[in-house]
Image 1 (cartoon, rainbow, N blue to C red):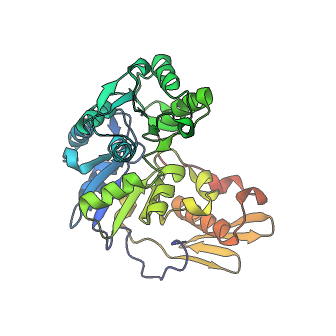
Image 2: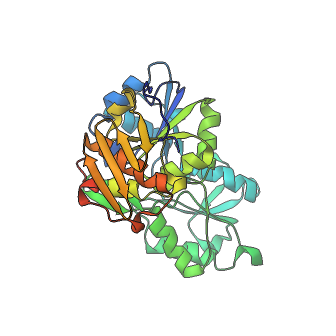
Image 3: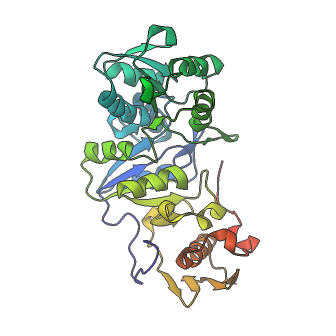
Length: 344
């Protein structure tokens, strides 16, 4: 992985990047408020490159997201925001005829994109929709989920209609904590009908392809807070990634990350975008990141020296990842996954 084999004169994560693509929840903000250091770090990142946003949250329009970011101090236009509903419309256009009726499970962010794509919105399975599209909104409840289930009762292979989900994030960071995400709502419909949705947003690649094409990115860097959606999706799309420890996934999740969900960079917060990324060395079972040193000793992981908290996470991850073994095969000291990093 990209964490291994770095030379001593390592550049900052932003060096050579032409477009920064940032997730929102857990990276820029939690709830309505900006996370510490996010706004100033992202504004500084604009110097010499483009700044755009990718979000799986389907509850708001690109215009409302842009307005919120601008209020936080990040001057943003709707074009700078790539949403999972936009990616979902790409998928729907491949599956159904122009002007078809689509049953929408979700809020304004999804309805607006369905209408912009030229489809007719319905909320009832009785209107014989040609497809179901489902995205998160706080107001989604049993009635909308039931209508989706009624419309999807026939499997697609038996002549049933397509089902597209904007995303399947299990959780959403909020100012009061971690709340259920669209994945839980999609799962409720799946449980009722026994079908799987086609997913448009992260970790699937359509949303990344839309962003890269829109901004003509040659060397993008994606910033995310989730391994299973953000980092996995960036890896699938061939995009360098940075996991920032201000959202959902914590140090213990980083240590246990499967190979396909490992980031290029691990950051405590977004200030580190602008700092030289330290060399990560793994030799004879010992991973070293500046003053942090972690050793593999059979089934034991030993902290030889701690260094800075984020370097300890980097060293621990490098040591474990270099073995090709799953974390449950080790005895891990609690100190290695201590969590001093800000989160909602």
